[in-house]
Length: 376
Image (cartoon, rainbow, N blue to C red; front, top):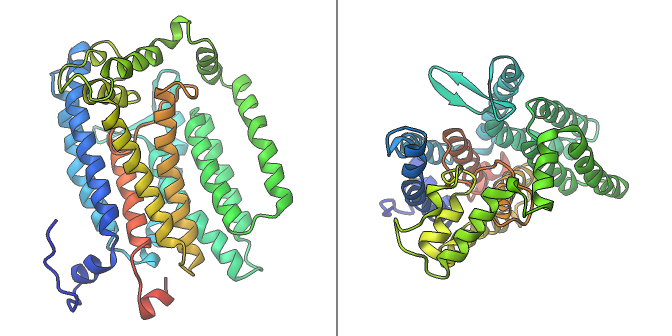
């Protein structure tokens, strides 16, 4: 991306160029590039196994890639007020779609999480997370500015509603991410110490409860605790792929794990990268995720606008935690969870929703001057 704007340029694009965090944009584009390479490496073998054309998944992923980049850059042009308005509309739409999913959604692996709209499969749970993060931040910030405003109650009620709709599908993993967003924002907004202790105690109780209530959660925990069982095939195969790849990998196209791993292009795409490009590539991916998250927090460290701080923190927690869950599952550090690796795993809904969320981060962390900063 070449610089074509002078510092005195007062156009929309000129102001954007000199106020947006270009280092984060560069890191995001690197992630997208890594994702494109790994999709081309992992997807053809999976497509051939299910009887589709070799580049079926590659074409579909690239079909969403250009719109996702446009959405991310377009949203980054918005002012914080515009981000709020978009999030409110988006949250209402996402909640409506979540409510419809159990009725009209198609069942995959015992869960109803997808809707088919105009021939395109959409996963509403991917879109509800960034929208909730911004609206919840607005409520918490408003409550701090006006103690009479029931912002905490509204944010908590929205959390309960969205969590309930997610658990109906059921999707415990996305519910956990949503809980982390809400909990982080509540804590930063001034959560009383007694509630901090209460939530800390509630977390393990919630995990135990999910184990006994949801059969698929129980199955995944059992597989995790018994790695020698037949149910742990994907994780064991993924670990062997990392071992075979070593430090520098076997070379592009030389990996074998993609030929036998069912979810090689989605949940376990990092294992394909580890085998073909080595541990160094995997560490590079980890560094990119860490850089984006830490860079985002550094940008809001001195920001005096509570809404911007809370919204950005929620969006970064979602982004970073989703990456951690995917990578930890692949490395058998936690029970497997069907969660994509941001901007790398195959998935149109995930790609577009993450682009939307990171576009919001770029918009909220832009340098603001004068009246623009006061009205944020």
